Image (cartoon, rainbow, N blue to C red; front, side, top):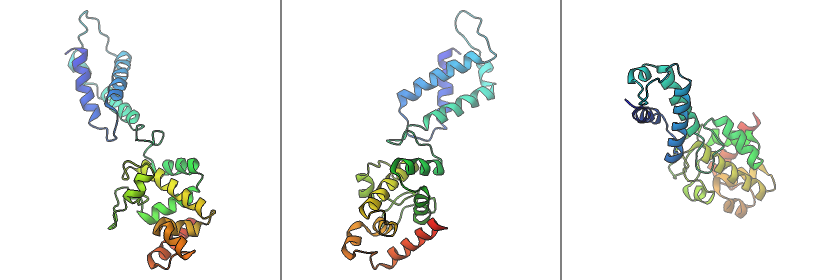
Amino acid sequence: MNVQSIYHLMQMQAMSTVTSTTNSNNTNTDFNQLFQSLIGNSQYTNTSSDSEIPAANFLNNPELAQSIRSQVTANSLTDISDSTAFNQDITTIIDQAATQYNVDPKLIDAVIQTESNYNQHAVSHAGAQGLMQLMPDTAKGLGVQNPLDPAENILGGAKYLKQMLDRYDGNKTLALAAYNAGPGNVDKYNDVPPFAETQSYVQKVLGQYLA
């Protein structure tokens, strides 16, 4: 089996573990570079003149195979729509979104806990999606392409929460009411709307935030 054949074999094996949406050309390039580097550092030394590497020598090296899979997977997770710099750890995403939009990370976390209880696949009866329960039209307006992606959802939710905080001069109560019921309803009543769901929502989020 020649080098190219081994490369294709291990590429298919490694890419089966990748779950994020990744540009295929970049992935192939990264994999090729990684493959060549790892082969160069392995104990096997190619002494033949026709660039042949015995298949058994490579396939019987589970450490090398796992190293390739792990590194390709790790490298691939960085390409997530407009949230390239964000990984899939929820706490990290919250902290980075908080820094980017200047919103208290505890407030973002409280909204996530109240909205979805950290279920990134949550979908409400009204159609709100993801960790911060973004409505499809709201998500689209915020530039969120996949509301079920944790990084995109938190970035979009934090951005929208920041917009509501700015709109109501930092008043968390009104901002949260607007996040739940829409700013039109808050403006209409010039206060938290008299909706049982919204009033309960605001109290619950603030309770989590202040806990």
